[in-house]
Length: 504
Image 1 (cartoon, rainbow, N blue to C red):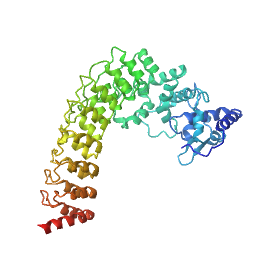
Image 2: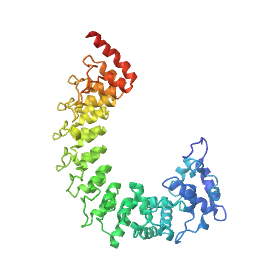
Image 3: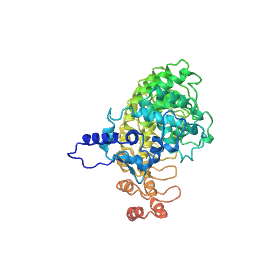
Image 4: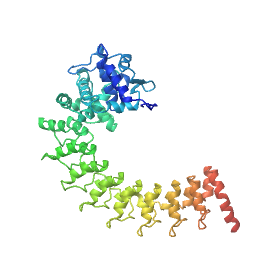
């Protein structure tokens, strides 16, 4: 982490200008080394370990393999910066001495062409003969190649920001054999964490990779060169269009959609269409491009999840608005588990999405889903007070509707100890605080069983709550708490049950 130290009254720009000038005036290659160190540390996608940095600095453009003699000593690397970079001892990562130095080095013109250089360095390294010869599925023993992971995962990010003709040539050299390159395995593992030996081939083609990173020029060049199927699935079932849609790469999406043979609503083995992929990531720009094609906006995946379902589940209000504006989108369409967009939005507490859905006349706000649980039941079980308020404001929502086990929303809230939700429910005249489920267990029983003292106090404060109601096994809340050793709960219940017994 960059340090924050007192700099009041100090002209830091002048100090940095002078120090960079001194670095440039160093002799014997230290000038170039010092500037490259600052370029890497300030523009890398993650904090580099000292070993990673030393190997990156050893890469020579247009070489076919890494020369070990080029790897600079760590002391030389840090010394060449004249104190502007240091090694964090605990993590062995290299950092700048102050956050203002990061701001200074990131200004246009201070280190021109940084991303071009970093991208070309990564690509040169990945095209080394010794790297190309590594087995695709052997990624566990790479300690002698510390720069391999960084270059595999980040070359595309640098190339997307600044791609030269030379970088383009290096990238095409890599991508034309990408599905048999270890960098594809490293990138794929970062995204999915699958055990590679169990996956079929092709693992991840060059076109998939360029679409993932969103590098328009590379996608266009690969298609122009021929030999690649723009609808081909990778081993996860994603097409290049799905990857571009998931990553929000609008340029690539537009480019792929411009081809007559693109299958824009293909449902592959990944169980997602490109439209669902964009909706599940909240990518409104990509969604607009896909919706122009005017077909398939309500197409479900193999689990019955539509694009609207995905957007509701993740709470993407903008995407929900776009889809609800369509006449060919059913806002109440359930998945294969009978879960509607409103139900999943309620379960996650996405109030904005719920408002959009509840404003529709063709929504059933009390429609039960999986296990007979209504949107209100799911909202109460999750403790989402705002969502509960929205549903309780409706006249067509029954707060006593039980699920398949007979458990009401109040029991669900009691079981979870959601006191705020319980207050909302108990304030209603139509709530039944003693309603038993299929096992004879009341809301108080659930609060006792789950050891939620606050929930119990709320229930016991009501005159119409019977603390002595036994369940189907003959156990009262007090007896259940005693059996489970919940002594604090026992102390709460004992005076109540004793008072009732004395009155009786």
